[in-house]
Amino acid sequence: MANAEGCYNGGNTNASPCDNTFGEDFCSDVPYGTRSECHVLDSGTHCDFAVTGPANRNPAYSDCVYAMSQLAYFCDTGGLKTVNGYQYKLDPNDGGSC
Image (cartoon, rainbow, N blue to C red; front, side, top):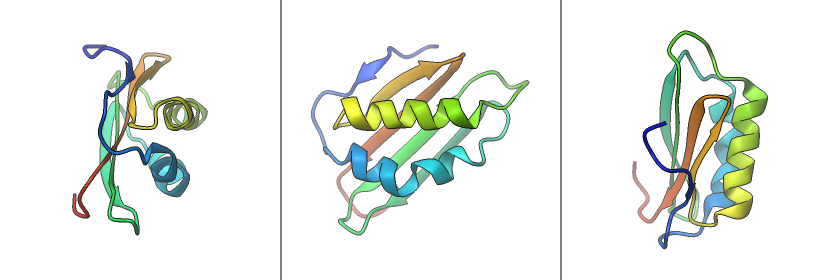
């Protein structure tokens, strides 16, 4: 993938609440190749989710859930993780709008 994998440096530390609240919903409907969404937590944090990969197939739901949970657990500030050719992004940010 084009972007390096790993945790973001600094910023909002609500990756876990973002994943716990919206992660499975995001992963449940990823069309071929690419998808991005933004959701807002009650705390005012907006949560950016994205997946990028091959346009000829859908990413596996289990791979998406795994990637998002790994990012939430190991990267408080979010980050990028690649699983089976798809790059997943979880990025919590300050501000209550997307």
